[in-house]
Image 1 (tube, helix red, strand yellow):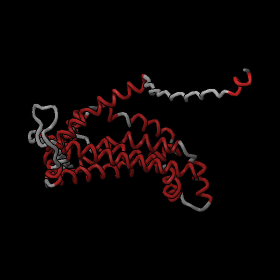
Image 2: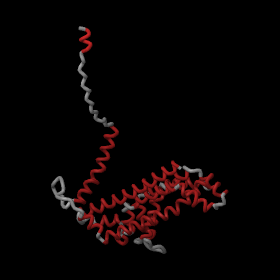
Image 3: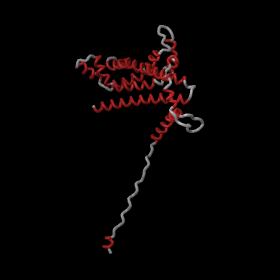
Image 4: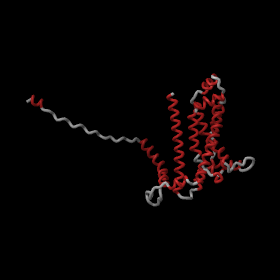
Length: 286
């Protein structure tokens, strides 16, 4: 009996079915997701209205179309406003870099007290409201030897003061991250003048900070409205002034303009981050 019992084959057990475990969402993920949803809802609604043929009392639009975007980009007034905004913003950024980068370099090499003065100076644009600054600029440059009100020059000079905190802080942080004294000494030992060493040695090492300053300032300046409206208005219509003047027209057209500005700023920010990331990875591998 025992031999027969040993010879009997036991039935194989069925393999256990794998259990599906749903990922647990932490409270941090829920909070971040909720905040992101609240921030994205107005943008999604604006995009939907820009693509809608008509959107009345219903929950969803009656249809989708690219008519409003095509009409926007075929409008000569919008094209001129876009070109003016790019001209003023790029001019202010170039002037900011020309003025601020050498000052930051001197503040961290030869004049340490200058850095303390600049650290206080960059806070002034945040302390003075734009409306107050605009009124003062109107009284100062409305007449006299420099009647700049209504011209793009007053916007360029004003935008330099707005970009000053972003440019100086980004460049100063990049200068602190490198050993400037050793780099300058090595360049001068090889026969380079201080001027040439600054352009050929220091600037390539702080290019990431310069890129961050440019894209951050650009995204801020392209959306500036108070100075542009009060100092130049319709005499030099920029994008934000054009958007304000077109608010009484079709809401679909205005929504298409808002989405266009958002996508343009988002694209430039992405390109800046991508370029900075490639530069950081290249420096890490070198």
